[in-house]
Amino acid sequence: MAVVQISCTPLGEGHGGLSHFVAGCLRLVQESGLKYQLTPMGTILEGDIEDIFALVRRMHESPFLAGAQRVSTLIKIDDRRDREHTMAGKVAAVARQLAQDGAAP
Image (tube, rainbow, N blue to C red; front, side, top):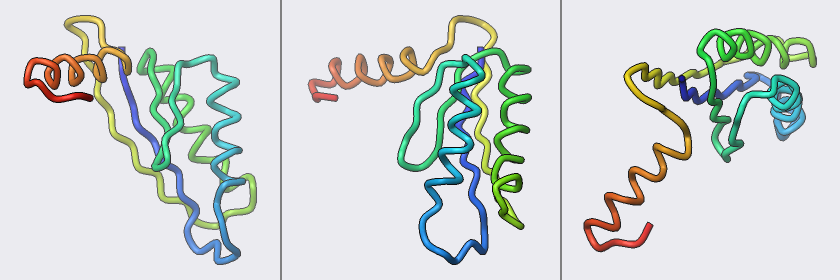
């Protein structure tokens, strides 16, 4: 299973916020049925890498379909195949480490 961070940013859209472009991308994520987490700086996806790649392509195209002329898409892939790998598991591993160190998460 893969955990992927993606951020699709239209460039040169000087008319203010970009939230309508983000919302368009997020609608595609919701329709995909993949697990996800929206963050202030991007969206985290969890699932089969092939399903994620197909969604990433659609997300990259979404701002163009909404009128953008240039889009910069950043993708970070963490694909682990030797054991279960999830968003929650990654966060829990850090929380366990902090607990061992006596720090609160």
